[in-house]
Image (cartoon, rainbow, N blue to C red; front, side):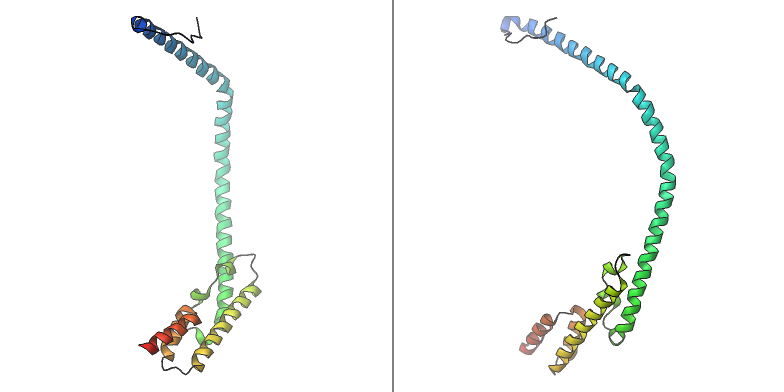
Length: 174
């Protein structure tokens, strides 16, 4: 069977022959591909049996794995809650005078819940935030502005002193 038919040219008179040649080549290609698939399947029989067994074993391993995973997640969740509670205790201790206007949620840093994050560092963060708020309140009160209450409200909402000063300017202009 001639496999290489390069350079073969069909004219209008031999188009029927071209169609026959094309059909023959397509049939030959189909036979080749069918044989390839047959040999591949025979070669893969041992692998397919192995794969089936491994998948069953993996399913058996998944059951305790999921149970362990659930326990680990529950433990991590509990530890995060404990760390959050510790940070909240520090907040309650330090923010006593501002608790009505600055909530724990508004200053909370998610890093504080990480097991590797030292609670002493959370305390330092909370003390720094408190100090910044105290400084901002002092600056606003020292201005003796007629808009002090509004300015304090803006500051407690945003904790942005620049915004407070711009707000005061816009209130004065109004």
